Image (cartoon, rainbow, N blue to C red; front, side):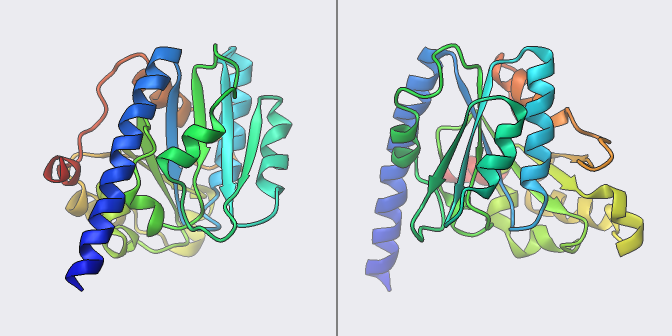
Length: 231
């Protein structure tokens, strides 16, 4: 068991080093990465499509890279925004790693791109531990997933710079307890902001783009206690 832990630590340390290099390269290009994590079916793609459309309307140079085990369905949806989109098929790997992302960002997108939104593989376990050189890390949870989601996946929620609750248009129908969810987020990540949105109605859309732009401009993001402990 000790050997397994040592190997895991070595892999994560190597990834952290690669993420640091990538972060520096991106900064030199004037590009910021937004790492978006969620469970499958949380509405991640729908929200990202709305944010990309808004970015295009505002004249923000942005692109999206979406990772899946199989199919290019999400990339085709996001491409409707008219912005550059790249699909990454991980061939069974349940997460992206910094060196993988760096490879896909070589020569893409255009050098004047301000934001690259990364739609990580849909799960809250594997991707949570891997830094991608991001400026902003966002975790999504839909109102259908239960108020205790942050407690079940403390690493994912505990390392987030921002938490977004999706599908709020059906919150009342499914009996979502917002206060309980916020309390559980606060337990694993004290002080992190929780935003509410519905891609269907448009309520709350734009928050992700605004926060991404603020982070890209140098506004300090929330510093999770868990991240401080790991530093």
